[in-house]
Length: 581
Image (cartoon, rainbow, N blue to C red; front, side, top):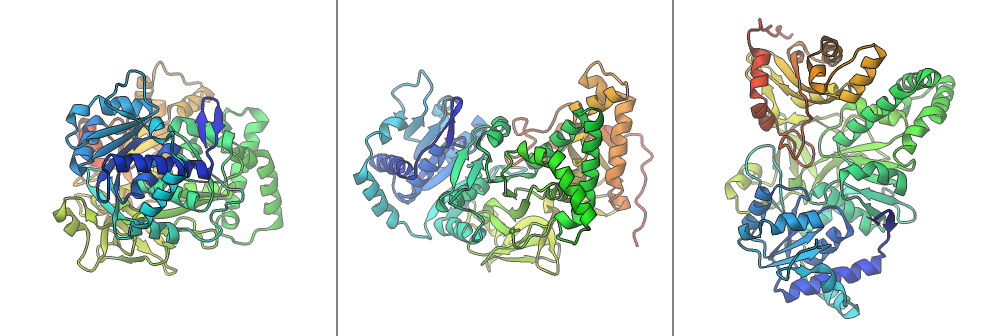
């Protein structure tokens, strides 16, 4: 399914296969064969998967590019991979690529779908290439695809990275197919009624593998091209399954609290009461513990009055939501389970195709990222680093042998760069990135991501970055949730002339200070935030502070706000951490 104007249009499986076969035949006529790299630059839409299968069926290598990638990184990826052909879908993407055509060294042909006005004869039109495809092309596609072996390179995915030059992760057909077959359990997906929403970038392996799972199980997929359209798509198509990242749930939680605050009088009292009931019901709803009949009745009433409305806001039919990309704050996971929004967390990396561990409906431990999927091994190194071995582990980094040797041990273990631990039942908990760990001047290691996740559970905090490496104490850069703060300020009779004025207002500083203390209450003394600065704008991918999976580029943030950070530590009688027993 895809949105055409105001309507959702359907493409049948036979029609999709016809388009795949037609495009694959056209690529073959252009000289694309086994091992040749073909770039794919597109937002989420049916043509993404059509192009992907057309490329893979030739034994060629798909080099996906994030649909909102910068021109410089886009040119680097195309040139470094040696892409022979570039497939582009969407007017904005076409204009961006054509505007840098002279910088592309290896690309001999451009194929453009939904081409913007003014595109000349130097490009091939996707619509024309597939127009006449029929049974003969489908038969030829099946013959060529049958000759592709599991060990052949299928894709090179350039990781966005939190620092430095992007690296091309090489994944074979076996890497991808093993992850699809091992990463889902029977009953996860149902061909007789499931409808999936696809909005995370298909250029990232997480959504790509989810898409393979949907399509291979006969699940209808509704593609959403831009994140701004997700809220509307949820209520229009009413999906039953989808994948998301923690940032999605953080914003959803903030939106829920904001709607509750907007309610007046009795309705607001009911909302607050329902949140209290949800908290009481946590052991039952999230962890399967027994619950008294009186609590079950209160929950049923709260569900009818409040929780059902929350679920209706995201379509009302979601039975499985997969969360990956980064750890989700335990408090958020517990909240959503308490209101009957089932989130199953997993863990993986581009280098592992990506799923390493996951929770399943039959085996779920809220707060963990699940147990290793079949055929995948996980162990914890002496320094706490998570190591992974299995058929999903990458072949290495394209044309970067030194980086490959650094990432892979001689006996096949991948050094993930993540820190975590396994509990007695084999459930994995990820605490932070190894390179993100802060070491205070007193020699204490601090995991910033855990603290940031706690801060972001506040309705008044939109985002946060914890700092303190080689410093005497931990501090934080905090992005306020301006609408939520304004609503609370109106209740208190406080007014602001502008967002900039809000940042320095004593009332706001005190409000955020209270939220920081709430987070500090769960931390060791040496981890607690002693000072914070308020920022006027959020961290974004476009601004360079986030990867396209919404992970913080910590070094970029620290450099960009270096002066702000220095002020946090200037002229301060810095407290020293107390000795830990």
